[in-house]
Length: 123
Image 1 (cartoon, one colour):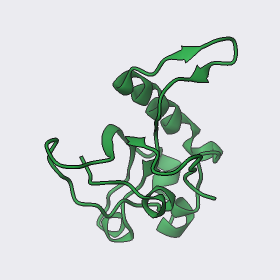
Image 2 (tube, one colour; image 1 turned 90 degrees about the horizontal axis):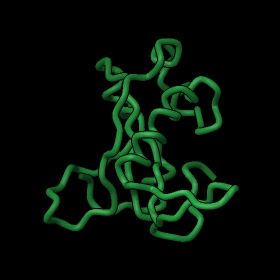
Image 3 (cartoon, helix red, strand yellow; image 1 turned 180 degrees about the vertical axis):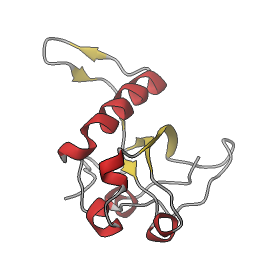
Image 4 (cartoon, helix red, strand yellow; image 1 turned 60 degrees about the vertical axis):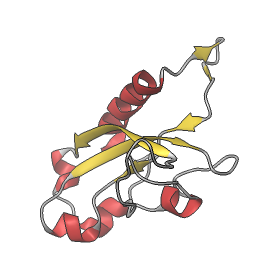
């Protein structure tokens, strides 16, 4: 479980925070880790780092991320418009450029508290 989360970390492609124990202060917990789809894994790092939550190439893995996130946090949806009833959200991260160069090809989603109102992965 990484330490406290900040706006800069949420906007970053990779998460540089060290893992901390559950008894230490933390603002997120990993809810999902999966392998990037083969076409994405074959791309150069800068192309992958430019992908967003709206990129069609990531939709399959981000759908799985969202399902696992909802199960992990026990998210409740109410009403016909499926309103979220939680203060948690699911930022996602890819390996760092150094990890990518060594062959890492995963995507990780966290259950994170929002440090500020209305934060998005990329502005």
